[in-house]
Length: 369
Image (cartoon, rainbow, N blue to C red; front, side, top):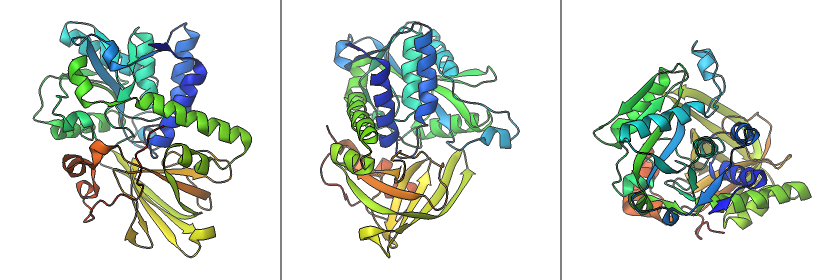
């Protein structure tokens, strides 16, 4: 078990934004929660799942909704920023339902805000943060989870919103039904709610987790921080560190996005420069960067990762915070092997998003530092 410093957490969250592929929230949102906990004297402890007793309970707290700014204000439901406290309420509700305490908290995905939510709730409730997650990236839907691939039940699920409503789903047909129900709850709550799910024992959780991803994100974030400080090309340095590669360089010519069924959906069109001159990259977004086409042909797609960097500042960009004319560097990272299985691709490959495209890996080596 390791106590994390603020710098450790900053590196982890930066790495999570990179691996979040445009989704999972911004690191600035996450760091606000972390600083609030630190100001209150709270501690952050990271441990391997095997350091828990087999029967210890773990749970995944996170936020579900759209990544777009000011959505709730546009819908007339008031402004709302992720603060972590509703996630704490969701964990407490799940504990009350389970009638026993939770020992460890597992981030549901890698993202600047959603990973921080698990950290914040762990610190506020004196729990342990588990070094792993069931995605290895950020994902748009609840069923996009390696837990689902391993038939680990999502229920009981606790949900909480800013209005003070708390509900428990003790039984659902499957994770797809849970996604539909919880997404509807989010849409009626300003399109952002806290969720705490997969309240299972450590032995079961260990079967579904991608291990070591929090430490991986921290190492990637450290490379990113150091490259920024030296004024280096962050996209190149991070791609090298994460066993990925720069897949496109260009200028954003057009961006289109909308709120659709509780997701931020849209398209980026990037006109190529340098070795990509006279070429165009098209990225399709559903909260995260999901699909890409190079000159109209399928290029890097899920489950591989697509991350976009501002070429001028070196900073990684979260969706949909772009402006036309931005100079961009696009990096691809390899998928974790579980996602490249037949079951993984059925759940989280191009066809699962409605595209008549077969998955063809473009980044050959597995992302591991």
